[in-house]
Length: 420
Image (cartoon, rainbow, N blue to C red; front, side, top):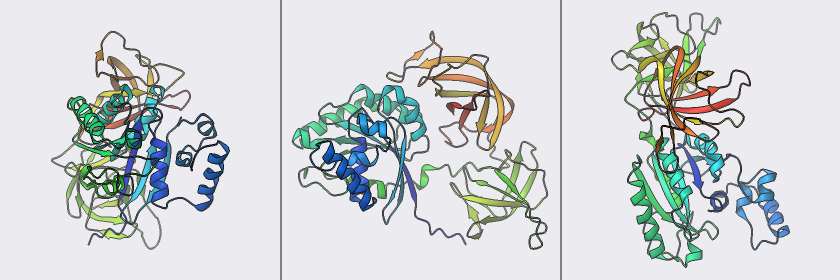
């Protein structure tokens, strides 16, 4: 029987304009959920006093880099972990500046929820729109618009409603399914963990209640069975003399013992003999579980191959149409340039055969004239790979639909892409 005793993990990313209070909000979540140690709290208490700040600056909990503390800004993606009795959380605290678009793409690529912060005094600004567009492009399933600093607008319901309407009018053009709006004060703690007495007009959930209860189980693709093979397990021991298992993380669908499956690229078919996990044998497995699958037949399978259903195969091809976010600050994307491409557990070489357009992150306008992609630019690109990849469109499967490019000379990751 399948049994899951582990606490569900939710990944969320924060985004907003500079000084919208992202780091303060995360600090508040960590502090109010009792996820920080006493010595950490005393450390930021000392720093706050030294800087002459009133009270304790909770933003210092997340701005871990010394440069960030000195400038009072977030300049890199900071990952933080905390848990409540209901869920475990991984937070990607991403920078708000335009020149760090790539950092937001990195932090948001695996997120279930995006928290978009809006300063109640400023309303919807250009950076808010940019981050909403990126959240839409990255197909983040749930977006929470946190209208922050409500204490500075006297907790006004009218201000909140105006921002709500303004954002909804803009977001109607985007591909985001689940929106939620919460008025908060990260500094004072209103509606973050504890319900605000000063905003009794707001009847929705607090932020932590939302994060603990939002339904994320169906965020994965449970229809299209995809199992990229990461490692072939052959123990060569007396106890497991003939054991041959294929280990990896399930990227889509539900695999069951007895299922007929096909192995790509060979096209050979077999049946699932057993599914093994760290906790013992399973009858079925689904995303994002890491398991070992054994087949009834001895087939030649290696890392990079993919186990799928016979009648539900991904696209197989060497020409890949991707929306690319360029990361490299030293070199622009080169037309006819050669790169290493990584996709699921596969690695191949590729050449850039076409740059179709550059995307204006602020307006979604497609620039067909200027096709040069520099750092933080996004554009639609066609790649030709040296061997076939087994992929799905990114909107169907965020795992089998994403790629990264690596510079062969420096070994730096220079781009991330979403397959169209």
